[in-house]
Structures are given as C-alpha cells and as structure tokens.
Image 1 (cartoon, rainbow, N blue to C red):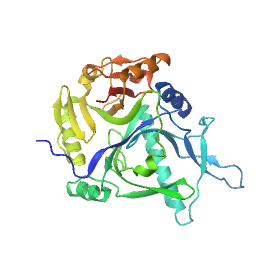
Image 2: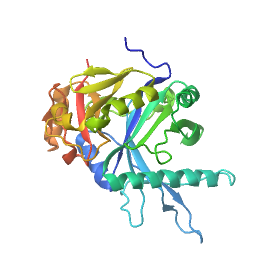
Image 3: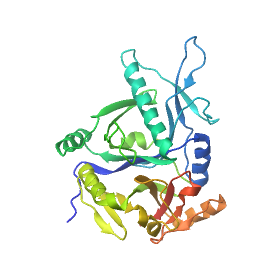
Image 4: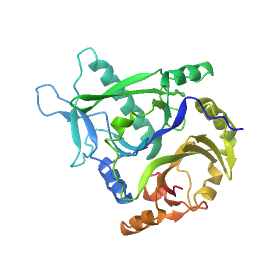
Length: 321
C-alpha cells in the first residue's frame, strides 16, 4: 500500500531557467500560457538616478494551486522585456542586507544552473506545514537551510508571506539536479487573484519528470522517498511518487525516449519535463498548430512540445478527466 505523505500536498511549482527572458515570454505566450510581465528587482545607484535591475527576474503561469515559473539571472547587458515591471527594493535598514544576500544567492544559483544548460532547474513541493516538513527532513538526515520567510506586496493593503526551505546538496540550496525545496501551500485567496484563463486550456500543474542515470536510479528513488515521505509505484518505465492530484516521475536517461518519443536528456540528473492538465486536448492541439508550435504524441496519449523547441524543457499537455 502506498502511504501518502502527511505534510507534502503536491507540486508547488517548477522553474524554467532561461538566458533571455524576452525570448522565453514569447515562447510561453505562443504555447498558450497567459503570463504577466516579468518583475525585475532594482536598486537606486549612488547619485539617485533611475533604479537599475539586478539579481533574478521572473514571471509565472499561474493556476489555482500551483504555477510554472520562468526565471533568469540579470547579468550586465541583459535584455529587459519591454513590458517588464521594475520593482525598486524597499525594506527597513536592518532587513535590507538580508534581502540583498538572498537575492544574490538566488542569482548565483541560477547562474550555476545556466552553466549546465537552459531548462528546468527548480522543483518545489507544497507543504501543509513547512515547519513540520523541516523537522521531518532533519530527522531522516536530509540537510536543508531551514525555513525562510519572504514577504511580497500583493496590493497596497495586502502582503503575502512565502515560507520555504531549500534542500542542500554539495552546494547550499542546490542538489545535483537543481534547486529542490518545499514551500508552504499557496494562500488560496491571494492566488485566486493571479489565476488567468490560458488560451491552451491549462488549469493545473500535474507532473514533473526527473531523468537520472540508470546506475543512480535506485539511490535517487530512496532520496526522494525521504524528501516526500512516500514510496513510489512502478508505471511503465517510470517510478511515480503520487502527490495528491500531482506526481513526480523518475525515469532512467536511457528510457526517456520510451516515455517521450524523440526526447534525449540534455543532462542527467535533470528535471526534463513538466505536465499541465487541460480541459480539452483538442483545443490545446488547435492552439499549438495555429501558433506553429511543433508537438508530438506520447505513448500515453498526451501531447508534448519537445525540449528542442521549448528552450530545453519538454512541455506536456494531459487531458484531465
């Protein structure tokens, strides 16, 4: 019998790390995701001129309980999308250094990820009690950086508190396959203000696909069983961790082509694909054709846009029952 985790409730988000956010925005909009203008943190330089973007910038394709993040690190000479939102940092003097350190660490990690490849480098799970998750992980010997809190203004009178932890690999905040962590469940009242109607019909994040070397498959399975407090089930060439309505699927690098015909991992271990649920797959297919987005049929009947056409991340569309 598969025992569901008591604290892990599903996928919180996956993160697609890209070199050119303007190019990525065009891709996601052609794929049929309604993504808002990206936010760029900025600081006013000495002399009081206009705020200058720095650190890491991102945007989301939002659903009711989860989302897909598109992120980049802001290097010198980076192309800023025309519709970007420049967000000057405002924080009390005692808080600002901590905030700057976190932004710098995030940007540095994204830069490390991009040196490997452009694609999916962020995998975050949802927790109903992130403090309990932190204690459980420590009890089973999983190193992490503790629970952090980031406060983001939603409206003038509303601030969202995001509580999260990152699992440490050889480098703080980075496992071999990327930035892996756990985030407190999204505030449904706040998240409902972000949800958009996506032209491709997407309504939920259903799956992340993690590809690993065949020789490491058992070890990675045991590692994620500790992270998620649930045992996987075998499903074809995959080992599936059920997470409520979502799932994490492990696949050996040599079997990826059997799961997604024609796909080859750009690196291993790596998160190579994510799946979104749609109401009507025929509507999705019509949209992709109209936008000249190439797609293939998986053995499961899902449609997917290959990684070579989607900046290193295969995007799977699955019709929900």
